[in-house]
Length: 139
Image (cartoon, rainbow, N blue to C red; front, side, top):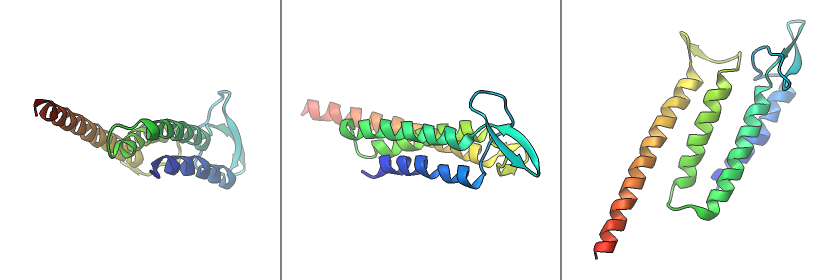
């Protein structure tokens, strides 16, 4: 019930990164760039806070729609975790302040692992629901 609002809260909360001048991306010259001054040097970077804010707002809208059309318990949580892990994997690839283990970004690794686990749970739940439907039709 609360999962869609978690995504909305994250969407709004990302604007704190803008106010604090943090969580920005690599230098770019695309149309969505924003200017920052870092160590006295002006540069234009990807506004990753904005990308994540928009991504989680879209996720909120999807979850709000699914809330009315969900097929089973836990579906919204699974969709949230799938969606957020995809958003995070993409955004983290553009950031400059990522926690690294060697050449691997920790957030990307964890997001990919979470995505794989959620896909596994989704497959399991769908198979289990199909078995339950077959059993109820046989009775």
